[in-house]
Image (cartoon, rainbow, N blue to C red; front, side):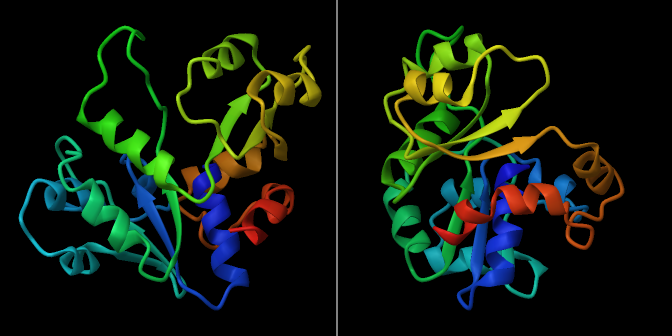
Length: 210
């Protein structure tokens, strides 16, 4: 959700096009868009030229396009080509999902390898987390330090913003409250037209710095 909202805000305020890359497969549903039968996964396993990715992009708004995940595993075999293509001009936001490390129940798979590679290559990486001891504990093992943090605020949490910054070693760039308005917009398939104002305002600084 944070990746979707940051992308919407950036697309409204910038002359450059914005590209949202979905490594998890949830974003078509988040935007109320049709599920596609092909996407990044199919290209990564093919020998097609990088420019062929443009054919699977889905326009969400006049200035925002989505690169859908597609189906099957996300091979890291063509990571270098993907990184080069992503740096070709648009503002890029990548939803990398949960970054797993070895020892968390199972070895990292191809999807995890690609996610870590894109996080490491990014100009900025943002961790989205709650002010939860168990969530913060996991950040100690991360091999890539985030540039900043988006904190999802929940009532009743004992840990503060400062606690999170000290534990993660990165500044909190935005705090977003758990808001039923976001859930209603997603459930209705209207996130593109019914953009939650409170969340967009909270994420404004982050979007402006892309």
